Image 1 (cartoon, rainbow, N blue to C red):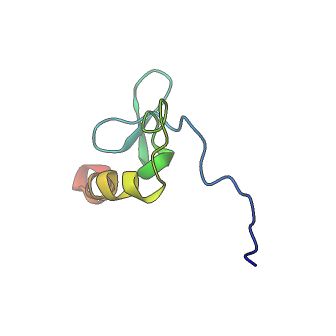
Image 2: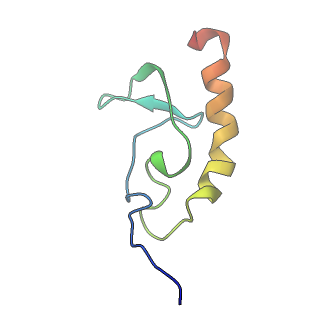
Length: 73
């Protein structure tokens, strides 16, 4: 017997970002010091299921580089 626990792993949608993972406000202006990767970035899971870690692998490096860039500090 295997115990199963239902849970929400992520929602469809997410935060609006630019191509480098920087979060944008409702006017499209960058929110200083706020980067996001994976399924928390909007637009990755709007039409189909994207497993939770796959988007993180593909967007995490860009978001990290943006967060560590001198102009982000």
